Amino acid sequence: MAELTQWFPTFDWFEEYSENLNSNRRYRKSSKGWGEEFDGDFVFQIDRIPTDRHRIQEFPDDLLRLDMVPQHVWNDVPDPLERDLRSKAGDRPVYEVFDVMSEEMHEDMPDHIRNLLYQARELFDDNPTYDRVPDKISMPLREALPPELESLLRQLEEFVTDDHQAFAYMAFEDGRVVEIDMLDSPDERSHGFKLSGPYSFWREFIEGDDTIVETVLAGDLQPEGEMVFLLEYTDALVEMGETAKRIDARYIF
Image (cartoon, rainbow, N blue to C red):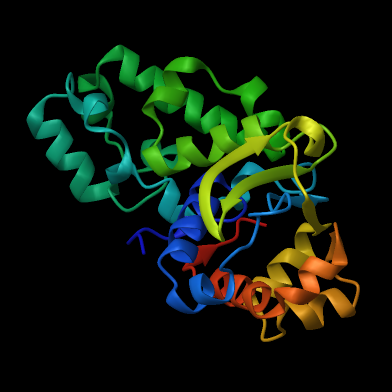
């Protein structure tokens, strides 16, 4: 299992999920033969991802800390100024840096770095919803963001559709995951099965105690495909659900 906490529902989360499935002996034993004589590929469909109902100021502060910005941002900053800034504001969000800068520090700051800090403050003052951030952020500011934040924003931009959905595809051979992909629509790749439901239900399932069978029977997540195969491989499907629960995940919504 990877050491990083993964954001759901990003490619990173599904990548770790596939790795954990393939290393799970209980799952591998119960999934033997899955997809050998039928299409066992899956699409996981997450609906109602609320990118239009949450705003950038809701991002966790630990993603915005000054000391998390890429090292290249500091290359043109005088060493004494960098040390002073890190000491005074390293654990604060980048858009609050001006609040702790003295007039002398402000004057010593390279113009392009000062401009990036102004852009960051203006962006957070504007406080757009997540789906509006790509239109509000300049490329220089994007390149100066902390890597985890930039990755999260990019994946929300690339993988969440205008209809607030995300589609993760996983290909299986003899129960083993051999490919994962994020799709623009569920019909982009041929698949035998789909599991779909609102983002809130997916999160509730992953964080909760119910098995995948209980969740499906409750109608929270909806399966599509040949039910005879799902019933035959019930133990494997239950273990798929338990494996998802064991990922150290974070949720921005």
